[in-house]
Image (cartoon, rainbow, N blue to C red):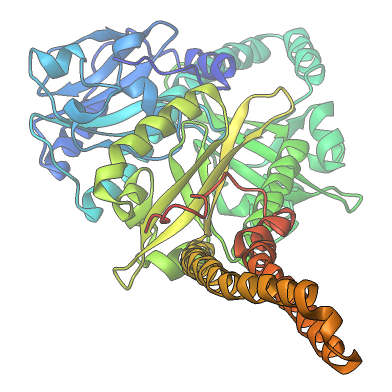
Amino acid sequence: MIPAHLPLNELSRLRVLDRYAILDSSPEPCFDDLARMAAMVCQAPSALIGLVAGNRQWLKAQWGLSLVELPRTEAICSHTILGDDLLIVTDLGEDIRFADHPLVVSGPRFRFYAGVPVLTAGGEALGTLAVLDTRPRELEPSQTEALRILGRQVLAQLELRRQLREQQQLAADVQRGMEALQRSEAELRRLALVASRTSQGVAIASAEGLVQWINDGFTRLTGFTAVEARGRRLTDLLPAAGSGGQASAILPSSGVGLVAGEIFSRHKAGWSFWAALEMQPLRDARESVTGSLTLLTDITESHMAREVLQANEERFRTLANAIPQLAWIADSAGSVTWFNRSWYAYVGGDFRDWEGWGWVKVLEPESRAAVRGRWFREVEQGAPFEAELAVRGTDQHWRRFRSRMEPLRDSAGRVRQWFGTLTDVEQLKRVERELWECQSHWETTHRELKTLSQTVAHDLRGPLRGIDGWSQALLEEFGDRLDETGRGYLQRVRSEIRRMGLAVDDLLQIPRVAALESPREKSDSSASLRPRVPPFPQVGSPPTE
């Protein structure tokens, strides 16, 4: 098996995974049910929820399997977490990355795999939800969409589990603090001092939802002082700054509750900000709700950075949609995630037909394996990819395209995405074929002209030599007997003979002059005007179709 390379965000991914504190935990029905549901929806005998740690893949849940963990070098899911969408391998035995995998060549002998990464809001892939089958196959569109939905539910369960654990821990801490506050006013001041020193905003409310106390962090974030906030509801202190992210949409209308989300609110002075809000109930020793603890974390900068990134990506895609070439974007693993309008105009279909590795279906069948093999090698090396491919259009006709793929790197030089284009070279191929045909016709004509000129010259030189010799003899032997007029006529004959000889010499030069006007010479003289692309077949040999 070819091991997957590490994700670009491996260190942060492992830190986030550690915060969930789920590795080596006991089985939980909610995760077992999701694995079973994935197997049922995809009609597969096996399914798993795997979390990819530093050197292993640990299975939180499984269906139809008897595994606990796998070395990371043998985890198919380690390839899945390199992308942000489904990885589907219709035949593991035919994929060079997995053909010799232990679970493919022995044991259950799996042949089909489909996995979706479990992605956090920050883009960290914690693991996968995957289904496996013992026969090569494909998924229906409804099944792939269901697998995505179930993958999001896995993250939702992880988030709920983490929040419950943190909230229970925080609630326990606050509860102990509240009990201490009830016993000692000094303890209350100490707890307030601790909360005042945190950068987060902290608000404590009664069981009816009325604010009793806020720290300085809450004041800095909202502009309201402790005196102004006391006795008011949180929704009054966190007015909406826009149509989205309203605090009133996630906070309970009365009393307290267990909630978390992002809000877009307005400072008392007028400026707006984004904040992550978490509320959890406070309980007494009898588990009765006595109030709530609300934490506010300023996330304005990170939210603005996400918006700028999304805007830049949207502008980039708009430009890519405006070019006539067929263009696409792939993730760091080389799996295509987007196509421009020219692609759909030429090959038809929609994104689900071509996403991931589906685009190879429009290539010539005999070239698909070679193209994918080279594609994997170039992606692994982070090197540009260039090739000439035959691509089938909606009219079922094949056209030649020049394909080029370039890596898009971050500031650290790591490949984050790939951008590629397909440029139609069919017109250039047609011109080259016509030029070759013209060259062949010219060479035939040139040979015929050369033969004709040599034959005519040979046929003319013989009689001219005879006339020239006899006229010379006549002039030498009988010139003194001729009058002036006769000698003049004889000299004119010899002059015309010499002029005819020069004409014969000129006739032999015609093929040489024609060679200077060769179509090949003309085409070579304009070669500097051509686009800089790898060479096509040279004129002089029939161009390939």
